[in-house]
Amino acid sequence: MLVRTILNQMTGEISLANAKDMEQDLMEISAHAGARPSHAEWQGQIVSLSDDNTKYLSLDDKGYGDVTGFLGAN
Image (tube, rainbow, N blue to C red; front, side):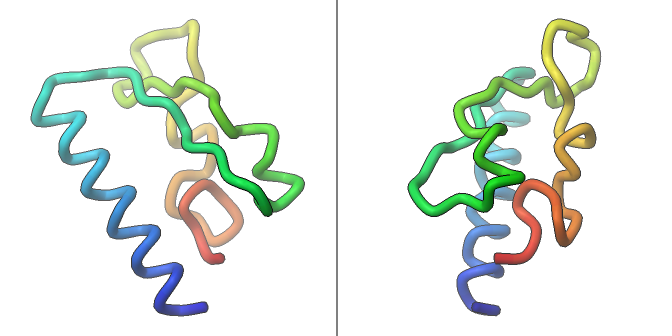
């Protein structure tokens, strides 16, 4: 599980870095089978990286990087 968590977090960080390099503010949260019930509701949602766009939630609102949040522990 540790390797999967590290790979998922690394992939997320690369996607985040690419979005910032391309000066994109909005990203779509990925969707996959087997998501935790608490995370399934996030799948396919759009998030604002800057938190300046009030139409969308920010990554912080999704608990980005927290153990129980988006891209936390698997």
